[in-house]
Length: 298
Length: 158
Image (tube, rainbow over all chains, first blue to last red):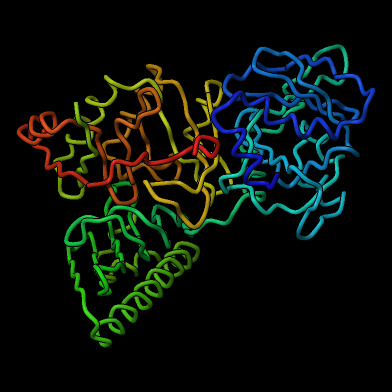
């Protein structure tokens, strides 16, 4: 059964069943860990309990054990453990051990995994490749208390630290954004609805700078391309000035013009963000008032 | 009852339209969804007080009714009085950036009754034609998008 087929079986059925092929890899005679969930978090179809020994046990929503998994027998890719807010965790469960890509060292993994999830790192490892695609199996990892059945809040990293770990294990963003003082900027390649004269869901390059305290847009430019039948179309829309042009043509100069405008706009956004950062750092932000459209500093 | 997504461009709209759209959708919703800003490598600070009632997080490349190049992390919460107040705390959809999570959306039984593209100041409402006509008579400028797909999809339910 290939990966896609395996996961297709899991969709729309009892989530715990998804683990059955994996349980075949479990070592016989390994007793299931009796879990004591530290927190009750509703949602997933199954829960993975990570024991300090490095063993994992899996239970369905009612807490019924579905089996246990040991480190050697189960190639859980730690970098695929997508640590989310709260104690939720999406774990990519590979149906076979033919792993691809770079294998990080144990030390690298240990440095990257929040404390409650360290037991996961003791399992065989591989690089992340498919987390963030369709083929992610979701569940919870609930750390089993280390002693006395008590898990102190200090055993968990702060929420934002767990969220930070998420970033290192999933696919890259297609946007770059940041906040410099009160200015928010964003560059992106994405697909969504664009209004004005374009009025369609369309792939586009976007460049945006806004002054957050007043939600004032400084500029918000979109360069979009799509096909209308067999004719290429280009659209340019700047939402602050409402300047919008769209045209479907084979005229190469129109195409060149659109691409040049896109490149120039992105450079302008990049330059402006840097200028704002430099001005704020040196206390000369007032000079930027000379830039048309840039509101005065607060 | 045939329903479609209608878009409201908030750029030039009266500021009260956002609160009216919220009121309309809040009355129908049971769940709130936000996009956790992955680029900032941390949860938006204003969202942290709600972490105790976090009901679901997931990552998906499906965002804004389309498969994107990168994945996005979504966080869902039950619609409580506190969460509703949080949603109403900003005057327009365009403010949902930076220290706030992006793209607030309201769901009823997994159907997005209101979803947004906050950096574009766009709001999408799930309406019948009659409802859209009524809202337009009240000052909205809603138009059908022609795309009724869900704004996001959980990976396992595709």
